[in-house]
Length: 265
Image (cartoon, rainbow, N blue to C red; front, top):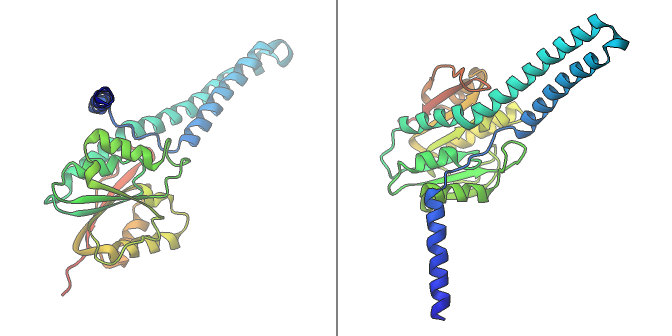
């Protein structure tokens, strides 16, 4: 029995050591898109090589044009795929870190991360909380993020030492399952871009302002044009709505939108 206890203790120490030395892995956004672009790029280059190999049948000029065109088009696909990959693995995390550091937190807030994925934004904000906590909400669609699963987020939170501050809820952003005035802050990293209709976006922002307490803050990262998102946020009654500069480093380019739920007059 004592031997078994020592063995369990040793295994626990090994596991804790592995967690301490591990780094969080937040996956890759739009993995199927990146894979498709890579395949198309390689196929385009291959077609150019094949035309060059059969230049005796196609003619020297046609083969040369096919080789150049195939490589140019293929290179465009590959560069776009690499840019999406690098943006997801590096630029997006840098932007989320900056957003987390700018949040006006006291340490005891209740925070909702809408579309939390594998926990990149959640862990960054949780590190600034002392007595507060974060609720990570997602449907965990693997087509939107590689390895997208609640277990991945829990593993990352364990690596970051934030497990005790994070709770997980499976739900859609346009139907938040919380009572009114439940949270002090709502955050999101591009989850609203994945809503399929304007109606879903309207419902999502209505729910956000409903679950926020008076004076509650929002901090959202949105891709593309910020206009539709800003309009919807203002329509809900949010005040102090601000749009940060266009992030060209991110692909697709993105904006940061912040705002505050007004205090009752």
